[in-house]
Image (cartoon, rainbow, N blue to C red; front, top):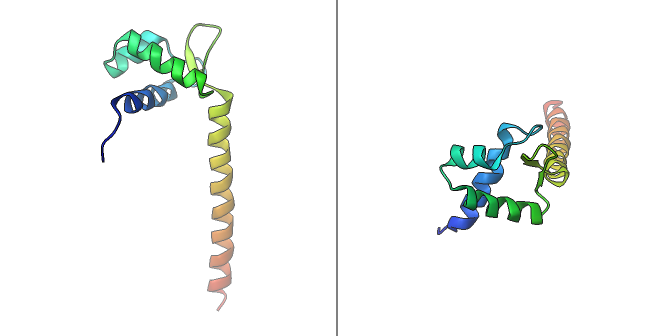
Length: 96
């Protein structure tokens, strides 16, 4: 399956934000960590910000946006709900 170089790079930048989700990372830290140019990272961060997945913090660093964290929280909640349903089903099956 062919992948988009730009799309892959944007996702790598997005995943790099995980390193410091509270204080964020500078453009340079991301670029150095991924072996990209600062210009590439700036463009990718602009795309992530435009889509509501990243923000520029007051300290100038970049971090996950509240929207990105909400997506993660919804995933966690759905996973928890599914796990509870599976546990309930296992209890019913094991009663016999």
